Length: 98
Image (tube, rainbow, N blue to C red; front, side):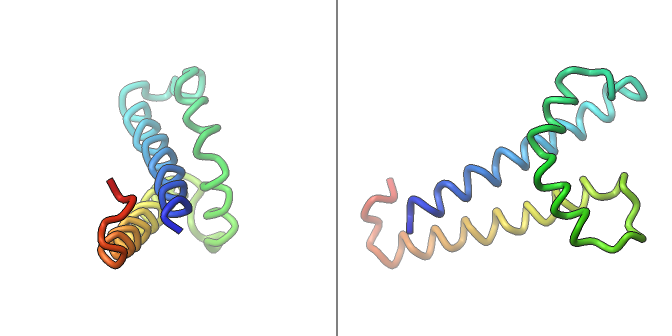
């Protein structure tokens, strides 16, 4: 179970960092961000999560807001996984949690 939580935490962390990087490049690159190689790479990394959130959210939510919603949902999921991992480590007496 601990291995599963570690993998889930890692996947969520990578997706969160990709969305943060997109946000930074959104501000720094301005309107030319769509031609920026790193911005496109970060979009590819976060695309599975943003597509899932796009399908879950109503169509009234604008496409430009979907990455922000995705970020906050991933942040909540990351917190839940982290607290579950802490609970498992405390319950097992910190065996294998170092």
